[in-house]
Length: 275
Length: 332
Image (cartoon, helix red, strand yellow):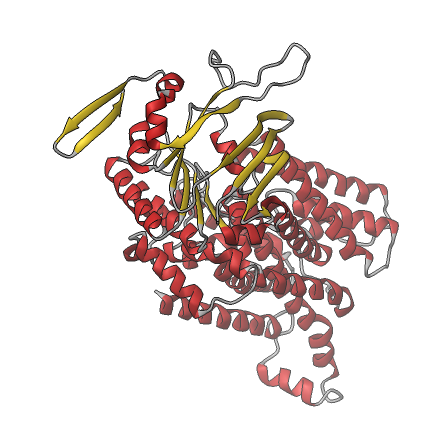
């Protein structure tokens, strides 16, 4: 079973606890969406997996092994991670960028083999960016660029794929295309974990949903609160997790997001909509 | 596309050989190719030519080539690691830091051949770390970092002048050291720095892929399994070795480290694996040509290579800036 499992994990960011005592598992070979308001620690939770957040307590297991004690390159061979907003838009050709997805396998100086080249080509074909292979990434539109980055993490050839807000900056068409690719990846057996902001998109895309919320629901701003004893309290917690239908029937999303759920029925079946 | 780049590389290679040839043939006493061959074939018959070649021309050409390689590659690395197109050993103050350390070395350990490159490296490395620390702490924009570099530069240049003025026994020509010059090089002075530059350069060539990945941003590099801080430190050490070694014998040569990577980025794109060797080739030629012009244009007077470099490089860099509208480079 190739899914990350959080065991009583606490995370701090510059001495401020963000999350405390989180235990969480994800279903194998499914799409899991992480939902929650801004600043409740979704990104922090995921970034334990690429080494950006520092885990202060607890363990993360993958394949029964202590994931965090593995060397970074070994981690990147088992789990690929696409970070949220990329500050840098590389002016490299698409092919070169996608080839960098092989970095965990190639290291600093090993030469690319036929196998590496084949994986890179397949990744570009899958993400439908092969026709841009020789163009520079910074000349492409946002939607294509995001697919190029998807191709890069696919070239890592890992069973687990973590995507932090992959659809946030895409237009409608771009989002739909991207989600279709994710469904195809699931059908190939990959485990996908992603954060989303669009509840309706999450309901349509995800099999499994994890809902996070502010530790204190009245919290207006994502600033660390100073406890009366002078210590910081953590910011977020997990409100619920379960299959998409379980989450829907528990009405937790309405509570966390202060939203109203509407139910529609037409010839294609039942459809839910948050507003 | 690929073929065009290959032709360009061959051209750069020929250009380097050509400028090296010119550097050997021309000077206060021009020597034809025939005379050069004869001088080596029959040492006793042409003692003056032989001495001139081995003691003056060849060290000078070698020093020029390695200065170009060292500073250009240091420039490519600093630009990639800091993600800042305006970074170069000169603009962020690495050269000055290294120059200051050279003065200290000359003051504390005069006549020790090994001391100068060692101090030059330490000076370069400490300055790099300082500027990098400032950039990290202030989380500042590209321009702020360059401004910080300029400030550090003038601070350290003041230090250089102070040491020189207070210790009159330091044997050096301050004005050509500050401008950067290749005159008076000897094989003895060059051996250690050039060997170190060569070693660092070869290491960089192997690490081109890592420089690219680092240029994708810390998050992405981490996700790809890179030990980001460690890799960055290795690159900063390599660039300090190269810049420091050049400063140890050629003084504060400016502009090569900024302008050559810029030209190469326009010609070859931003892939460090191509950028590093090409910048090295072009950098070597650029230094050699500037040095040659400095020797020939106003003969019998000689201008330091660094002055010619500023005369040619300055306007050219302005042209590049205007053409690129701010000269921002987004990635490595």
